[in-house]
Amino acid sequence: MLNCRDITKQASDYVDGHLSVRQRLAFAFHLLICGQCRAFLRQLRLAVGMYHRVPAKELSAEEAAAVVSKVLASKGE
Amino acid sequence: MSVKPELDEAFVASLKKQDHPAFCRLVQLFHKRLVGFAGSIAGVELAEDVVQEAWLSAWKGLPGYEGRAALSTWLYTIVRHACIARLRKEKPNFHAPAEADEAEEELANDGLDEWFDSSFKQDGHRQEAVVDWHMNTPEALLEEKQLQNCIDHHIAKLQPMQKAVFELRDMDQVDLEQICNMLQLTHSNVRVLLHRARLRLQQVLDHYQLTGEC
Ligand SMILES: [Zn+2]
Image (tube, rainbow over all chains, first blue to last red; front, side, top):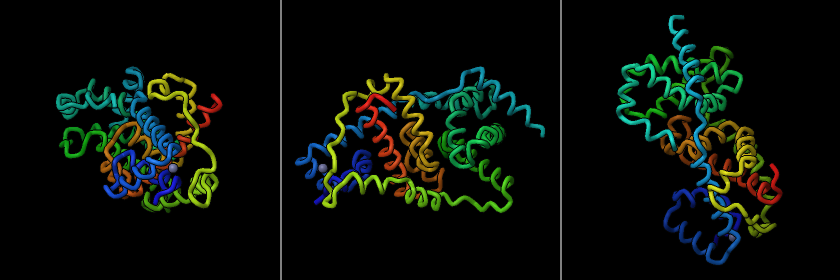
């Protein structure tokens, strides 16, 4: 029988789909009786979904051009 | 990730011809994350410099890029090599990085084990109820600027390997397999590092949801 600590330890593997059928069943059984772990997993999924949507941090076009000039200028060294 | 649709065949073909605007766009897209990655391996002081060296290698290597590895993986690999070369130069007795050892060390010292011990009773039940989040859609979380700054701040404080894995997997959505190759880590190591980074940030989110403060 899994307890809340076990669930917390393996939560990412569960959320990311890395568990075996047997492990998933054990998870499902615990989640059936434990609202706390259901909330924890829901919030973990929510956070991961948010990280996926965080816009990639880009340079501005000017900054990129400046980096490229510098890089290509160093070519002959 | 917003970047992926752009890395299509036409774009790669332009890059292979060393098309200047395409290369600028590539730099624009990847520079910051490569600097972050280099920081995890070589330290923040060297990161910017090392990535510039890596860009030069990339520029020279582009005509020969055959697309066997995804462009992002190819770039990260060049940066990793540049980091190692630089560390060898800076520290003569530097021995090849054993990321696996570093990962093990991080896992032993990241404080998460203590967190588990204090958060759960002997029988595995929680000491305290799970914090109930009132902001409960990804959009709501994203709109909260102060929270995003807070998360950035705590990502920066993660241990280097955890940070690298977390950013590659959860922010840039790079395949697990590719991350293993880039960092020379096993699947299970990558998964554990990722999970521990997430748990750390989950605590940050809990705290913010409770108090409205970072
Ligand atoms: Zn539970």
